[in-house]
Image (cartoon, rainbow, N blue to C red; front, side, top):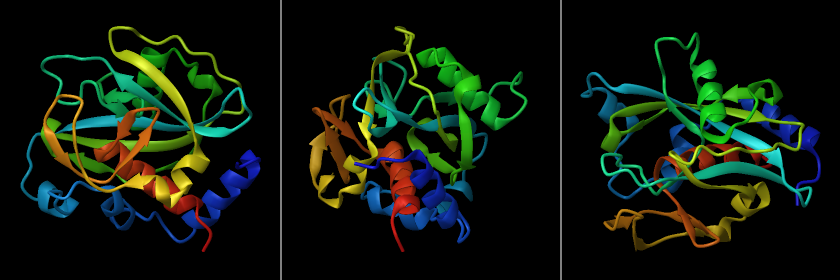
Length: 214
């Protein structure tokens, strides 16, 4: 168990002095068919910009956790039924990408953005199936948050201890069926029967690298 928020933030800030791990971290949890980010972005046009919050919160057991959510099923959404960070598309009315991420956090899970503190932006990540360039923001909250999930977007939410992700044995290698029923060959986390893979797992890999000792 990681007992102290000060310890978490201090460790991350020390790691950030050396720069973000970026693709070196992402590749550890990338699907086998994944290409380097530069290869995608050199050919892609008219991509959409997504903004997400990777939020560190304390659960009812006093454990520091990452907040994740399970998206509802939408026929036209390639990411429906998947586990993700709260977030969504940057809109014209959003002043900054971080504002967009906080707005989406509020709209999806009912979290007051005034209770959120930014640690650092993380490395952006392109998602080919939905043509989104995602900009993640690593944040924390000192408060015991309450949630009001938007049932049209969120099936469930979960606070998963950081210690779970820091344990390397919890990374599973192998094929499986996605929530939409197609075959996937990618490393993943499995937590309470939920498979966490793809872009979400890749972003978590960067957070894990920031938290690890030298």
